[in-house]
Amino acid sequence: MMDIIGDSTITTLQAPASIAASSNTAGIDARSLAGQGGLILTGYATAGTNPTLAVKLQAAPDGDVVTSVTPGTNTGTGTCTQVYGGPDAVAETITVTLSNATTATVVGSVSGPLADATVGTLYQSSKVEFMLTAGGTAFESADTFAIITTARTYADVAGAAFTGLTTNRSVQKIGVNFDQVNRFLRVNYVLGGTVSPAYAVAVAAISAVQ
Image (cartoon, rainbow, N blue to C red):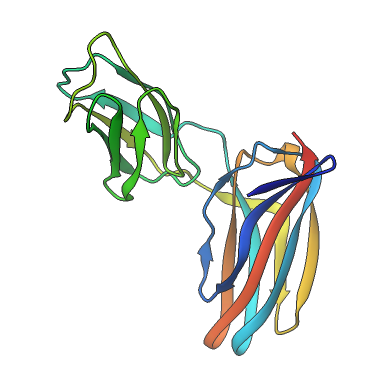
C-alpha cells in the first residue's frame, strides 16, 4: 500500500500483525521509493519468555527470472509477451490456459491457482506479469502458454536492520538511501526466545516521490 503525503511516499511493508515465527513478508515493487528516506518500525512483545526480534530490510535486483515462454498447440494466433517475474517469483512452471477468447486461468506448479488473466490487459501478480494479445484468429478454450520462472533472490540491505527488540514497546527509524537499493523489497523477521514468543509489528518505508 502506498500513500502520498506532500512530496513524500509512504509504502507499507508490513501492516500491523502478529509475528510468531521467523519469516518474510511478501515482496513489493519499490520503484515508487526514491532518494533519502527511512524505515519506520513499531513493535512490542506480546508473548513468550525472553522474546527477541530482529527486523531486516531485504532487496532483490531488477533482473528477469523468466527462462522461457512456450505456446501450446494453439488454435488462436495471439501471443504472450511482456513476461516478467514478480517480486515473489519461485522456481516453477506457470500455465496460462484460455477459457475462451478473452479470459485465461493462471496456475503455478508451486504457487497453485492465481488470479485469472484478461486478453489485452497487463496481468500482474506477485509471481509473474505478462500480456496476452489477440491475433488474427481468436484464442479458443484450452489454448495454453507455459511460463517457466526461477526464484527471485533477496539479500539483506546493509545498515537497514532493527535488532535487539525485547519486551518494551518500540518506535524506531533507520535512514535508507533508496536510490542505492534494488527494485524489490521485503522485510525479514528473526524471532528468538522460548515458550511461543510473539510480537505485534508494523513496518513502513518513507521517501521522496519517484
